[in-house]
Length: 561
Image 1 (spheres, rainbow, N blue to C red):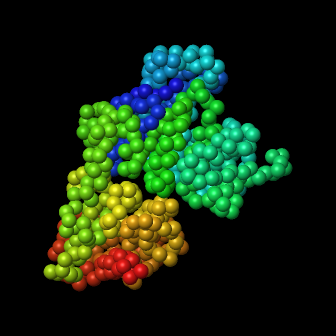
Image 2 (cartoon, rainbow, N blue to C red):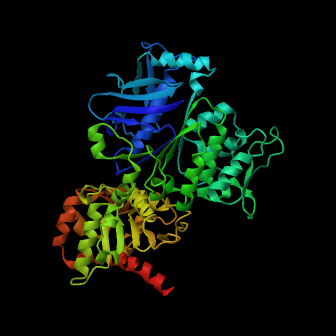
Image 3 (cartoon, rainbow, N blue to C red):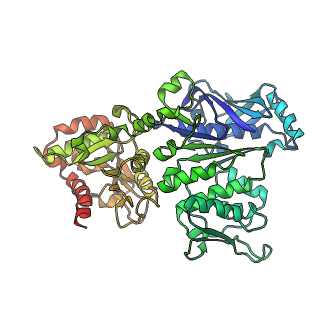
C-alpha cells in the first residue's frame, strides 16, 4: 500500500496543487516560504481527519452524515495563530485528497475540513466518495484494522534524550509517536522493535550509516522491578555510555531507525516517514549514507525536505520535486528530470555562484534580511569613506531574485549549512540577531558540523570550512539586552547599534519589555528606516565598528594560527 498522488485545495500556502507521488522516495526542495513544510502539515492533517472518521471498532468509517469534529488544540502540528489560518482564502473550506494504491486499485480518499459558522475552535470533517468504504472492505479482507493500517512518522531534530524514560506499552508508545514526541520514547522504540533484545538489525543499520561498529545494549535485569528503561550505546572502541550522552547526530539516526524497526512488522500497511531537513542536524558526510540505508526499506514510503546538494544528486528519476511559484501557478508540481539537477542546485545557491571574481576574495556575510544588508553596506561606507569594503553582504534565502528574499534567522542557518556543501574556498559568515529567534537558530547549527556551542563565545566555526555562525556582538551601552546564560532572554537586533535619539526620531522604539527595565524592541517600518540612514552623519554608525572588527578578526586569527 502506497500513496500515488496528493491534491491540496485552499490549505495554508496552497490555493490548489496536485503532486504525483513516488512509491519509494520523494525529495522536496524549493524556495523559502513556498510551502515545503506545509506539504508535511497537509499529510498530518489528512491523517488526523482520517482517524476522526473511523468508528470505535476500528473496522468501519462513520456514515457521511455523522458529524465529526477536530478541536483547535488537536492542530498542535500546524503553525497557526487561529483556526482561520488553516485556509488559503476567505472561503473556510479546505480539502486534502490522498490517493492510495492497493492491490493495483487506486482509492481516492478526499477529506474536507470546514470551519462551522458558529465555532472558532473546531473544524468539521467530512469525506467524499465511496472509496472509503471500499478501502475498509479491502483492509478487512487482509485482516487489517483501519486505525493501525496507516502510520505516519515525522522526524524532528533530536538534540538529547531524556534522562529517565519509563516503560510504555505499545498503545502509549504509538500515542507518543503520533503526538510528535518520538524523542521521549527512543529507548522504548528500541526495546519494542526487537523482542529478542539483541538489536542486531538496528546495530547493522546505524553502523552502515556511520561506517563504524556501533553496539546497542539493554541494561535492565528485570522489567518488573525497574521503573526506567536503560539503554547504552558503544561507538567503535569508545566507552559504553547511556544513550542520552551520545551526540545529536547519532541520536537522530538511532531515532529514525528505531522507529523503522518498531514498525517493520507492518508489512501490508502504509508506513510514511517524513524527514524534515536532515542537513539541519546530521553531518553532511553522513547524509548520503543515511539515504542509502533508508532505501533498503521497500515497505516504507519516504518524504524528505532538503537543500543539500549531495542528497539532491542522489535522487533517482521521479524522486525530486522542486516547489516554486511557477509550479504552484500551474497547480501541479511534477518531478524534476535528473538532467536538470545541476541547474536546480545552482539556483539554490545562485546568490553565491553569481559572485564575480572580485567579490569572491571578500568575506561573504549572509544577513537575516534585506534591511540588515543595506544597513551594513551604508555603515561601512560612512565609517570608512574611500576604503574598499572587505565584505560582500548578501541577504539570506533561496529565492533567485534577491529583492524577493524573505530572510530570517532560520534562512541564515539553512543558507550557510547549504553553502558548506558547495564551497571549500570561500570565507563566509552567517550573521544572526542576538535575540531569542536568532540565538536559537545559531544554537541549532549542526553540532557535528560546527563547533559546539557555549555561552562564552558568540561565534561557531565550521569544522572543515572557513564558515562561521556569528551572533551580533553587543556594545557596552546595550549589555543589559542579553543574558549570557539564557537563550530566551535576548533582545538585541541590528537596529540597536543606533542610539536611542536616532531611533526615537524615526519612531523605532517600542514600549519597554519589562516594567522598570530600560529594554525595548524595535518597531516601525524597517524598510523606510533603512532608506533614511544614508542621510545620517558618520558618527551615528560608530557602534557598527564593534561588529566589523569582530568579523575581520575571525579570519585574521586563523591566518596567525
